[in-house]
Length: 144
Image (cartoon, rainbow, N blue to C red; front, side, top):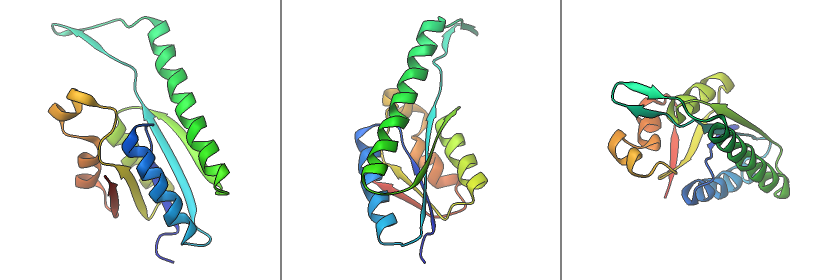
């Protein structure tokens, strides 16, 4: 068996949906494989000078609700394909969440989209997929 434990890093973006399609294909050609999906979400932080401004609870709830909706979407897509997958939602910086989750679940490969929902911030800080590729100790499939 090539990859028996497959981890998909999913954020609902176009690229992560392509990564989802590749994960489904990989799982189907590897009988008995397990699929894990992690959706990392973080609450926004607003900096004013050196201080972090408090974020209204309603804004954090919106981010949380979107994360729940994103994980439900991926869960139903995988179920529709007849795949039994473990889908988790973890709060924190995406690359760190993906790498820690991969280690905790002892997966064989990480599948991730080349571009997420990061926008300009991602460009400035280096993308999540780049960070995962640089720091992972296992193969990473970056889907364009």
